[in-house]
Length: 366
Image (tube, rainbow, N blue to C red; front, side, top):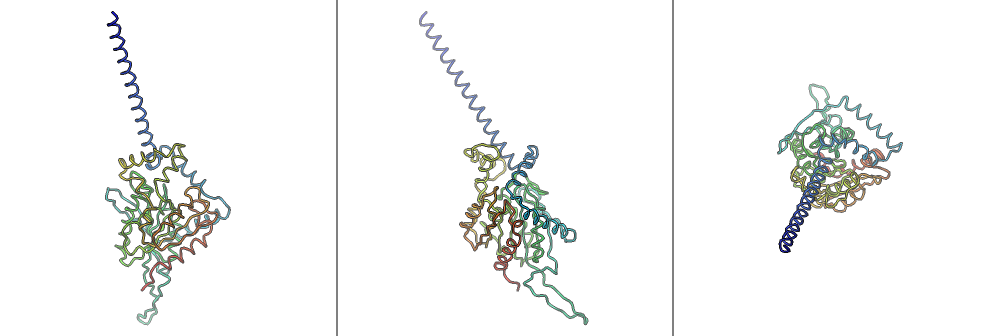
């Protein structure tokens, strides 16, 4: 009897251990499943526009962007002036919508604004020709081009005020919607990484139109990071300067900061898990999207610009990029400017600095 009782007790103990092990396994599996779903959610909430719309994430991002800016009367006034001038220019400016196909089958859209003859390269002198007794003023065609790149969750229209200024300087402007934003197709926002490959399509377009093109790449925020990532690649000599306005150092660091800010969650290990999830779903790794690593290999003259009151991307990031850049470089810090507001806080200094920088970097017309 005692032996049977002990055997029964032993069997019950085994069953109890199995139940505990099974319960622990189920709990761990559920926690793991929850973690995977959480990571998947975070990736979609930050990088998939169709999902972001369902979450009304764009409203949150808009609010955060507004909070990262400085709302002073001078900035508001300069912004409105720029918008009014741009609107007036757009009513009469020649422009054309163009498209390009990525290797993975997405159609990208850009707007082009050709330079007008009377705004062509101011450093090229007009030539006078005599024909049938009449004096004809012939202005040499401009070879100056600018590729203008918008920021995270932005669209090409945000860069039109810059296109207007470059137009007054005799530039042809190409203004694309980056992958998965605006009119351009895509599944995941590229954080500069997929974008910097995509943007070579626009460089190819420019060179197909003008083999002598002198190209400037001017980006803001994520667009600036995209431009800097391009400088880490082997680029055509035609790309002669970059203007980087409020760029971040790398997407990995930015993603970690935003997870803490937006979702009140720890960056580690979520960001590393998000990198793996994004690699599986989107085909790229946030760790690859590093402007900081790219500028270490850069040979493209670069003007770094940042507002010292930027609450979205710290001015320290542009300082780090400037220090790391292995190229001819300049740094402009605009006091009192928030995120993407340097041109609105002090437009004269902003555009004069760009003009002087580009005059030095672009080769003179032959």
